[in-house]
Image: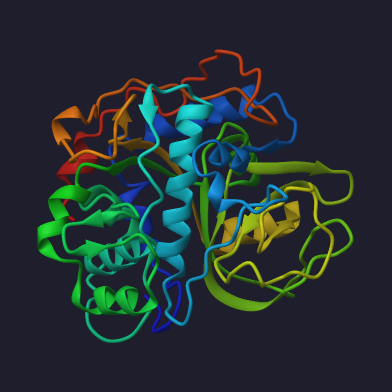
Length: 353
């Protein structure tokens, strides 16, 4: 494991233990390969799903605002939180699950539980992808809401750093355990990434890829230097004549970052950029690229957040399907591609975390 004390800390063997070495993983590989074969092509912009549930996160031009991790090395947790937001929205808008969007996910919770699950509490900043994947199963997530005396409605750098060193409050853990991410997939090729993004599965990319900080005249960012960083791909892809299979990457350095350069499409999220197929291939080969699926714990609709939280109303066994590839959230056909369905997760839960 790297000695880096800030940002993403590589742990390839740890990621392999919680993904590719699980008993159920072979079945997932077969299903993803089928998804690759069945992919109908086309550009997708699934980040638009979030607008249906959290329009205030978008500006007057319909562009999603960027999260800002601030002066703490919480990129893995911040990227994860936003991707869970996208997954909730896609599960409902694209996969037609009968659930209510819970709320925006707490970045501090994700970062701190990732450090705790990875055995990193104490001094320093940064976290591992392996610890985050363990935490999503063991501790689940909390949302940007009030929980008793804990007000998580607004991201706090101080709380993020404090919890990242001391751990999250024990009394909040039972709440988080009701909202787990049950399935994840280690992407090993651009074709897998392309198919999963198109089907509406958000992707966390942790790598040493660094960019120029500005986009070219078609919205792409050129590779430059190393960042040791975690960023997200919110199910958005485009096929470019020159750059090939391309992916939209959302950063966590605020909406004021990377303002220079072309915006495509016109509702391109703030703080985002496109990468080429060549750069995506480099990230897959040299980083830890994970697709998220099956967020468990969304409330069966309708649910009134204005009343006391009643976990008995939390339907955690909603059967779900993957989606067809669509460019927006309208006129979605009911089509089941069966990716990740009906897996035996016993080995996942029984593993020593």
